[in-house]
Amino acid sequence: MTKSKKQWWETLFDKKYLKYYFLEDYLFNDVNKNFQRRGYLTPEEFFAIVIWKSNRAKTNVRRGIGKSQKTIHTITSEIFRAKTPEQKLNILTSIPSIGIPMASAILTVCYPNDFTIADYRACSSLKDFGGEIIGNPTAKISVYFEYLEKCKELARKYKLSLRNFDRILWAKDFYEGASGLKHLAKGIK
Image (tube, rainbow, N blue to C red):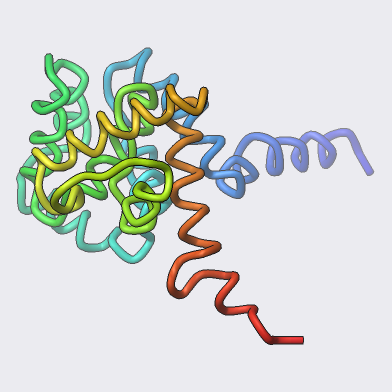
């Protein structure tokens, strides 16, 4: 193999494509740092988050951004400059087709110590860890912030980062939930 081919393969695997295979690592390392340094997300970074959260939503989110007549640069710059968590969430949920679950995923990548993802899997596991909230955090902003505070409290109690606590909530439902992996595999040989 010639030197130029080796360099081509190294670039191909290490820098351009492999990061997308390990998408969560890319988001919480590179994209987070880029956002903190620049104060905005690029369209590719933004849609990498959207696809990571819910691949099926990408087309609707793209249409919603078009309807808003704002650019991703403008939207994410506004988030960066917003003073309160409520303002940050409202900027995103004002975009057609971006609800609380998607907005919370975008904000979690940008601010992993301040936000957590409102997801039906994570929400359904919360009570199993001693957290109880009234209402649906994926549907109502005030309930989302109650959910967020409860997650922060329980993460501290269990000596976990907010991000790892969210991962555990999601994974518990993925494995033990009503249509989870444990249920699916039960009785199959």
